[in-house]
Length: 462
Image (cartoon, rainbow, N blue to C red; front, side, top):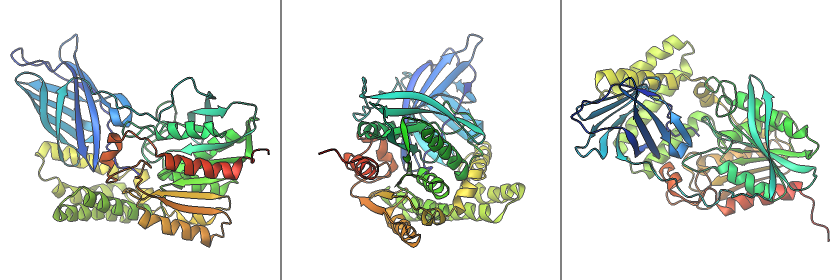
């Protein structure tokens, strides 16, 4: 599910007066917004012709060298502006030049303090270390309107091997599904390949090394991409196409089910997959996160009303110009606390995000027809503490749809103590993701690999 702020900025600006401390160098800070904690590293340097340039790394999103439009330093006031996101930051540089304390503004106001020095990378003990006991191969394959780049991992030996296409969740994702400093699909691919299963994982269209346009893509477009990945596996002599299936996480589960409903897949694994439409998911996600984060009821009620107002416009108004005007009427009062010049930019950024083809389609996307059409073996797993795709809302409808469709081989399980990323969690809040060393709980890895092995691997000779 899309729950994190996508940061993509470039910076340019003016040089500070000589009397002020310098802002050049590396700065680290943590932005807490929307129930998440995103670590940022700001790199600032002087331009040879005068002024400043800078870039930002989003540590927990695995993105570096991201761009901002402007940076200025006047007296000790540091200002950054990101026009395309309707985002800005204003902070005060301390007298000793060691901190910048201020506010990040993007659909709301959030405190953000940068401290001089780059953040240390978190340790992720489950990430595989070389040398690896299997083969890796860089691959590419053609989809509708995109060329996807990925990695195929193959067990030692000639094969043909059973195989899985890994499908990431929503938002632009690399082949490892890098989230909060974790690489869940890398860890899962490593685990499955060590069990004798070939694995393909790939960068989303328009992201990392894949071509195409992500911004205009919807769930069916992503299904075209995953289906092309499955076709690639089936074209190889070292893969047994009859035992090739899909493993999808979050929106990737919707994608995997859609692909398997229209082609003959060997199996499907759905990790935190929807059992209701996108509007219901997002409404319940907001409520669950607000409750777990201790947001006051009156604030949560205002958030609910705003969300419902935006969704109503998107569902009722197909004309983009009319929808834009009505969204402006809904959003402007909600951002009244911002200065007028920042408010206008923030409102437009929120409107642009709301009017994305993906959100319009996702709100009304019904996962049940695809689930009812699945005839291959299906495993559906949920984390008990998942606040983004809550099992109480989704596990029952998923199982009911599989039964209604007469699926002969399916299993729906809720794994105790695990969150949306299938980590062992305390609260389930997205703010915990990056603070947990574990990328994916061993119980989840075993549940997935044992089930796939049971359905694809021949029993050992006696």
